[in-house]
Amino acid sequence: MNTEILIYEKEDYPEGSVVTITMNKPETLNALDIEFSREIDAALKKAEEDDDVKVVVLKGAGKAFSAGYDLGPVYFVYGGGTGKPEDKTRRPSQRARLAYDRWRSESLRRIFLLDKITIAQVHGYCIGGGLYMSLCCDLTIAAEDAKIGHSEQRLGFSGAMYVFPIEVMLIGQKKARELLLTGKLIDGKEAERIGLVNQVFPADQLEEETRKLAQSMTLLPRDGIAIGKATARLAYDSMGLSSAFGQGYLGHTMFTNTRFEPGEFNFLKRRRDVGLRSAVKERDERYKGLID
Image (cartoon, rainbow, N blue to C red):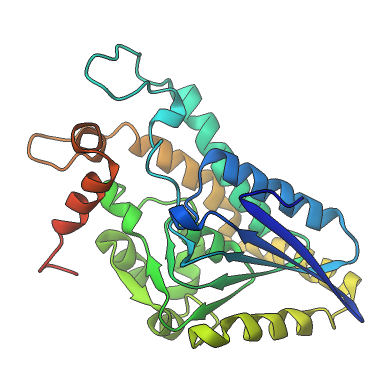
């Protein structure tokens, strides 16, 4: 299962096993492109089909958990051409956009409804798609100095994201809207205070504390975990949380049709004109002195 970009490790304890899935693209802060995400899906499926496994830990190699979805191919993943002025490729169809966004949403649903106990081990940046993954895990343990938030919203989403109801349930409507509309990043301590993560530890203790928590979860019986996850799913359905995944991908597809008016920041155009890094820098510099 191990590849250059994903590490799958299984550790056996007296009463059950823990699988640790490590995202291993430190040079991109574990940004989630299509290939990377498909490998994560496959690793989760393998863990779910292994009856010895009781717990799955998701973590990132290098300086970050995950900086979110890779902004380099944004829009192009729908078949939107190269973005260059001379490119006459037709605008992507709604069919193409919906199909891709539905797959993204289903990947998150897999984490949310996995039959194993899931733990996100968060350090460094946990942004956008990385945060969505964390939100879908049963538990999240973070480093005190982690940087957590929705800077992806500054592309223009303005509060629409894949798992909005789940975040509202965790931290409340006002705080969720604040994080989404501002795109600001908060540290692990603040994330714990508002209920976005379960516990925080100094960065040098995070690995050990997560390992101990995961091992403690193996003390639960396999059938107990299965029944607990199944009944939790029924509760999520009754609370409307399962609707997050349908609402989320439809909202994302609608956003890709946004018409930016003259004078409004258009990330796709700026990426075309000045490149990815400069476009991201320009996006965030607009907030200096206002929020950051």
